[in-house]
Length: 145
Image (cartoon, rainbow, N blue to C red; front, top):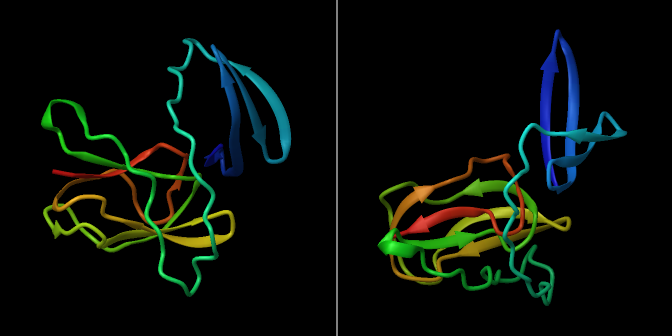
């Protein structure tokens, strides 16, 4: 699910995309459900199964996301969101050098704070999210080159 906030002619709207099949999207607008036809079919969302966290992350050391696959053509190691959630805090910036196990960001998923830890040593070559962003499972959050 992806959430958006729009203001149209001064009136606020909260839109949540529930599902997309072909060119038909199921959306909730301010709590009302609609089926919306899009001009073009949406590209399918690629996600991979994720193991559920074994224990709460509020005070215990956090576990990292499942190992993402390296990007094609040497573009870097893609760090993906293991679960849908909200980015709470980003601890690195583009160009920072990180080591495997370093804390990259904290996100809230399933009402728990989780840390995304570096899977490899390298340099942060891209940050694809901002604090407060809602992300889906499989969204690439950071790239380590």
